[in-house]
Image (cartoon, rainbow, N blue to C red; front, side, top):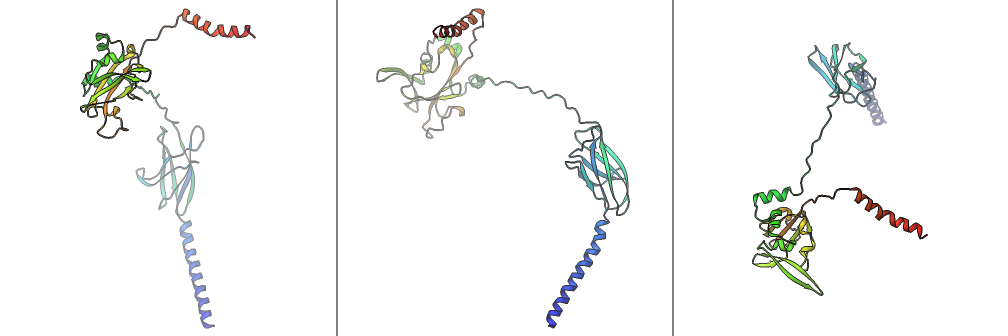
Length: 291
């Protein structure tokens, strides 16, 4: 019984101590000085988010800083009372809002700070872009003569090439052979690389073409549409954009890269428009007559 009575007395004392502690803390917590308020647009009255709020003493010393929330609300907690200046600024506003306040000990005041000057008008944003010519890489490599052989449009015209295969005859690295595949005969394309013959990688305007020994190079493009040709003997000289990662290392054959030139479009004339109208209108008229 005595032990139980002592335990009850101990618990009672602890409860009293906690109560006294809260009684001591509550006046201290409620006695804290506080400046709270809202910052709004002076012209619209709408609250402003993200405004920097500073509490200054003597116009220079910053005693507290915060930022307004979504509803424009803010709270500042100076350590002492006195005369203060509340200053509000925002990157999108030209003006700075200021408000002089006097804060007494244990006082809480609520203020409204207004920002004027409106959102800063931004200068029109002008984006200038230069379209990259698909032939720029080829022209730069041809200018430098980098590790390959280059057949230009001038070379094709000068030599009177009548097909892509005929134009490639001026590249000694390339070997053309008649390939018989059943009843079909094609101009097969091969490359003399590392002392042997192999099937090179074929690229048209930077895109790899599926090839095999029966591939007819003349089916790739008409000679009149060619702007230039790049020929690389083996993997050691091939630029990175033409490296075929699917091939085992060390077994890469050479590469032939063909680039087409933009051909001028035929002008639109009344004669052409009339002919197009006939192509569209005649089948429609015949269909109605035959109903």
